[in-house]
Amino acid sequence: MTLQQLKYIITVTSKGNISETAKELYIAQPSLTAAIKDLEEELGITIFNRTNKGVMLRSTLEKHPENTSFVFPLSTTLLLLKHLLI
Image (cartoon, rainbow, N blue to C red; front, side):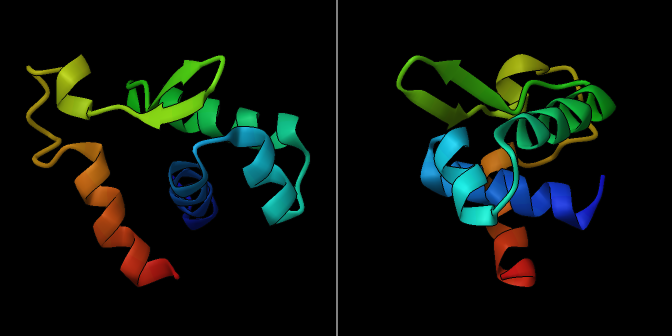
């Protein structure tokens, strides 16, 4: 996990849209999507629920209740990290 990936996740969470986030961060949408998918694979979780209207943050515990390495839902963790990164 890199700080850049965390920044991407935080920005996508606040925007609710990957295309708008890519424009704001001046990166290509496929690059942003790939970075998010790489992080999801690294962590073994699905970070976002994807719909035709955008994306919403998914609780880590919702997907993997047996995974005790995540104490907080992902949304709470990202809010804490947001204050450190931005």
